[in-house]
Image (cartoon, rainbow, N blue to C red; front, top):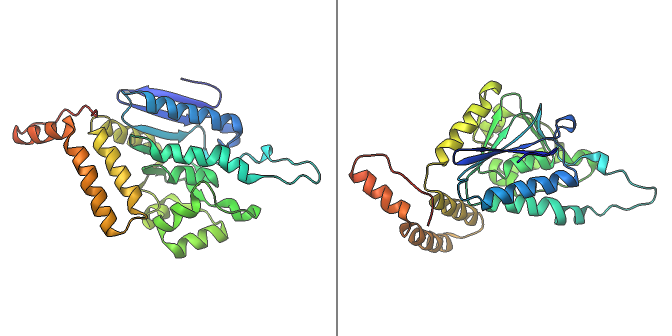
Length: 263
């Protein structure tokens, strides 16, 4: 599927979704919100899609909100709460809830909501030239799109507070060293590495990976007792899948398993 704002490329077992407003550093307007949400829903509904790559066209991943959509009349008081409730929050929730692994391939600047969109992915790769910027303080705003939730959990409270208050850019190498992302790679190798990971996930036990995602998300708020109970329940589900039987059978037969990713 291709339109002016989002490009979807279908590969064997996975899809690549590219934000496509390169002249605006792929910043969000309402139309791109709608196009990206539609692309995510299409990927979710496609049973052959077992992994997803999210990246940006041109020299940026996503610069957050397009401020040209934020021109106000004299005396007008904007309602940014409504914007978050209608657009950004559903987008982050959808991205986190997808049944397959999501790889963020950050090819350039990821600022504001664009940075937090990247951090919402399961595995984040970044080109060496990429930078992550919590730009909100420069506008007198609060980090949104999950920023105040992701940052402390990824980099710790001291760094999260400084990043949010100072709005200083974090280069890809430092983001990797701090645990903000999985890996930084040379610019020219970014998409090759993203495709390699997606192709790997495309032949893995997709339902089991979904349950791993569910368990890790719940662990952020569960105490140990509740997490142990959740692991018990999810392991019960995983053990009833054909992929578990295939994995054990392949182990004893000393061959590579052929996972279907289906219940």
